[in-house]
Amino acid sequence: MWRRLGVLDWIRIGLLGLGLAFVATGLLPLRDATESVERIGPLLVFLVGIIVLAELTKEAQVFDAIAARMAVLGRGDYAALFLLCTAFASFVTIFLNLDTTAVLLTPVMLALAPKARIAALPLAMTTIWLANTASLLLPVSNLTNLLGMAKIGLNAQEFAARMWAPQIASILVTMAFLWVFYWRRGERRDLRYTPPVLEPVADRVLFGAASAGCLLFIGALLLKVEVGIAAAGAALIVVAAFLVRDRARLTWSLVPWQLLIFVTGLFLVVPTLSRYGLADMMMWLLGAERDPYRTAAVGAGLSNVINNLPAYTAVEAVIPPGERDQLLALLAGTNVGPVVTPWASLATLLWFESCRRHDVRVPMARFLLTGTGLAVTGVLATVWALTVTT
Image 1 (cartoon, one colour):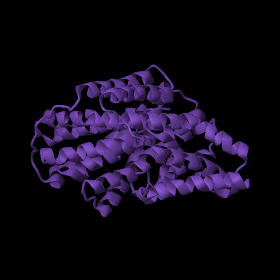
Image 2 (cartoon, one colour; image 1 turned 180 degrees about the horizontal axis):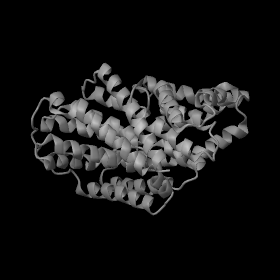
Image 3 (cartoon, helix red, strand yellow; image 1 turned 60 degrees about the vertical axis):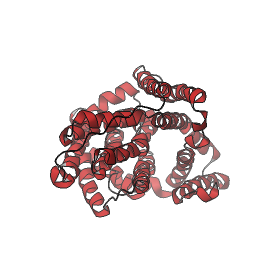
Image 4 (cartoon, rainbow, N blue to C red; image 1 turned 45 degrees about the vertical axis):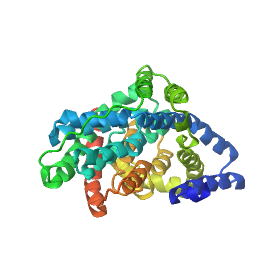
């Protein structure tokens, strides 16, 4: 097993080891460490549930069927396919988490490309940009949202009511950048594409169970069920179906242990660093005015330097609980902004690996330049929408 671990896996293990060392040496008091772990307990339950649900939904060919039918529905028209793909990627991100879009939807879209003779890069960029920029609307859309819910003091419905306008703004800006830099004819070259031939799903029972599990999860969110319970319940339905129909697919690799140890280590390391100078640096960066644009810019900038999860955790620690608008502006920066560097979010790291496995070349200079434009424009538009709807 140790030989199969990649560089990112060792970084995650090292982060957890560093956090445990901080606790063992007293640099982080045991009481503070316990409070941090208790805070993320429900998040870890949610992560396991949603990733298992998404992985098995992909194995049941639900995503494949939807993607193929989108291509058929587009009837060879790139503009129609563009609208369908952006809607699909946004929907998956909003309701099933950005990592689902980056990790599971990306291979589906890339597999569709040769079948319909579609350029792969526009499809790939659609998934990764919208995995980040469409993750504002619901707490489940992004782990940063879940991390901030207790301090923000809103339930899921109140959060959505506050973030619908920023979410629309960020998606529209993303769509504009996608079309101009990756989808328009001058970039894709082809006038039309060839709709693929629809293939039957391998197991209709698994397909139905996975579809029902996803719908149940979405319905549970609308009924204000706690996200961890909703994700775990939906995942159990699909797991039960696979136990009956295809038990061999149920392996320990479904459990996202990498994410679990990364998040746990993060919530031991960042509080320790905050005790020894990090908090003072964050307060200096934010300034005394509590300006939402500056807050979002700090969140976006730090995300592209050190990753959005530690960036959000470090900045959130110095924002008072009563500053709800500033916390929401921080989310705008750490969710919409991490589209410049390959390590800005976990989703982007996983997306690059998926592109590599599918032999899709991502021009790095183009990725950085277009991502910078999207980050600046998207964050500004998102914060503007947040402030005008306050």
